[in-house]
Length: 206
Ligand code: HEC
Ligand code: HEC
Ligand code: HEC
Ligand code: HEC
Image 1 (cartoon, rainbow, N blue to C red):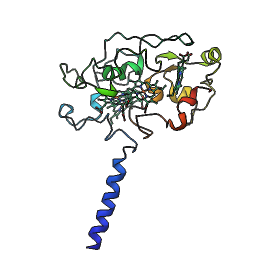
Image 2 (cartoon, rainbow, N blue to C red):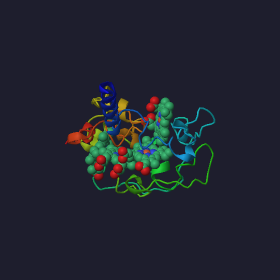
Image 3 (cartoon, rainbow, N blue to C red):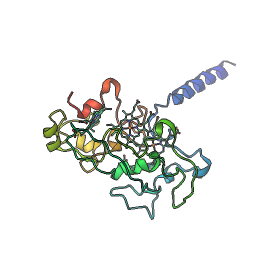
């Protein structure tokens, strides 16, 4: 009897732990579609394939999901120093689900899917109300702005510099703040915790 209740306690504890959603890794997160009927139980295949990948987006890692063809309205402001154009690279991959124009189940050459991103997760094609992405963030931009850290010499707090840990070919993308695989396990797929605005102040000298 005692042994059974001890086991029950351990199990309850484990369930409580996994229930927090702050475990590291993609399993069980919003990006784990293996429980959806349309995924054939696969986790990685919705986004990646080992062969015959889509190479239309520069630097896309063995991409397997249909890529968005939408036209976007980028962020703009009078105080912005960077040049912000159409989303490219990693940001375009994220928007291939998060702009709401491409079905989640359109991967591996399949089209005609019927499941779309909704609610708070829908970023849409109007990016004028979102943090700018697909911009070159280098030492020159930091100097021009005067309130940005130099990304090539400032530590990100993740082991190396901002450039090495958070930029993609010197560009700031969705993946600068987010890790699609939930590597840090801090919620919202953030690359590091934003407690006390720590994520923001990694780059902004405020
Ligand atoms: C929801 C889409 C999505 C899923 C699911 C996904 N990935 Fe990724 N993966 C991406 C994106 C986007 C990038 C590029 C951004 C980055 O590197 O952070 C990437 C990058 C990578 C990279 C290269 C960069 C790195 O982080 O090492 C590898 C390797 C990788 N993924 C492996 C996997 C494996 C293995 C799985 C399944 C367990 C998986 N991914 C599931 C979207 C996904
Ligand atoms: C294959 C489609 C797909 C791709 C590609 C994808 N996502 Fe998602 N993502 C989703 C879906 C679907 C959800 C929401 C699931 C739900 O709750 O309905 C989601 C949820 C999220 C969330 C909310 C997580 C939370 O805890 O609230 C964030 C943040 C996010 N994605 C960021 C990204 C970023 C950044 C990228 C690119 C690096 C990306 N996603 C690529 C489909 C995708
Ligand atoms: C400068 C950092 C930064 C960039 C760049 C960024 N995000 Fe986020 N994103 C955040 C933070 C921080 C949150 C969490 C906000 C919160 O919890 O209130 C978030 C939340 C989200 C959510 C969840 C929304 C919700 O209310 O649950 C999604 C989806 C998302 N981001 C997708 C994206 C996509 C797609 C891109 C690229 C187009 C992107 N993000 C670029 C910092 C960023
Ligand atoms: C990886 C580095 C990085 C992170 C992390 C980051 N930013 Fe930024 N942010 C930038 C860069 C670079 C610009 C472009 C600045 C410019 O060109 O004037 C920018 C632009 C902005 C702007 C627009 C400035 C303008 O003049 O219109 C605001 C506001 C902002 N960031 C707030 C935030 C907030 C809030 C967070 C945290 C949720 C955050 N940023 C996280 C690098 C970052």
